Amino acid sequence: MKRLFVFLTLTLSLTVFAHDPDQMGTLTGENLVLSASDHGFAGHIGGRLVFASPLEGKFGMLVRHRAFGKDFDTTFEQVGKGLQGEIQSVGRDGKSVSAKVVITKASPKEGVIEGTLGADPFTVKISASAMDGHHYLNPQFDASVGSKTYQFKMDEGQSCLGCAIKTTFLVLGMLRVTGEI
Image 1 (cartoon, rainbow, N blue to C red):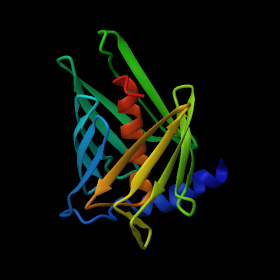
Image 2 (cartoon, helix red, strand yellow; image 1 turned 90 degrees about the vertical axis):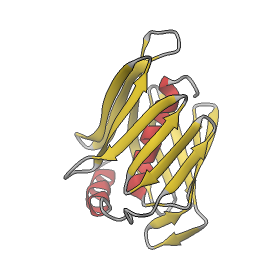
Image 3 (cartoon, rainbow, N blue to C red; image 1 turned 30 degrees about the vertical axis):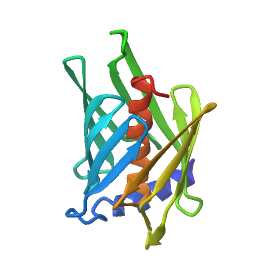
Image 4 (cartoon, one colour; image 1 turned 60 degrees about the vertical axis):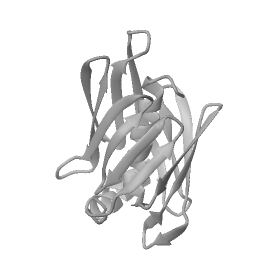
């Protein structure tokens, strides 16, 4: 865990400004369409409008989504020695729901992100059409959450490991609160 913390602190703090702010990619999957640029996202996941932007001055992400007439804000950031965030929302039945995402492993060499989504362990494997330095070009994300699988892909875009971690938090967390996974 200490190695993960040191790696993430050193590597991810350098990647906050790694992307071309004029490049616009599209992240798609079942129940998911997001435009992506400069470490930010806008679109919909599971029928909910979503906007996500990087935190200023530190690694993390602020996520805002709208459900049943209410706005919900969530912060994904370093907590203690790990990275985590909890998305609060309203389920289709009108009751409060939440999805806590904790990242426990991130390996750029293996292209793997691991963690927990609530009580369920998950693994995300990242593949790409090519690599440009430490960026995955047009990455595809293959997620296994418990016994379920989910795929999403970025077209005309790129992702460093830091952005891939934030993307994983956003997508898996929102899919959980909307009941898609």
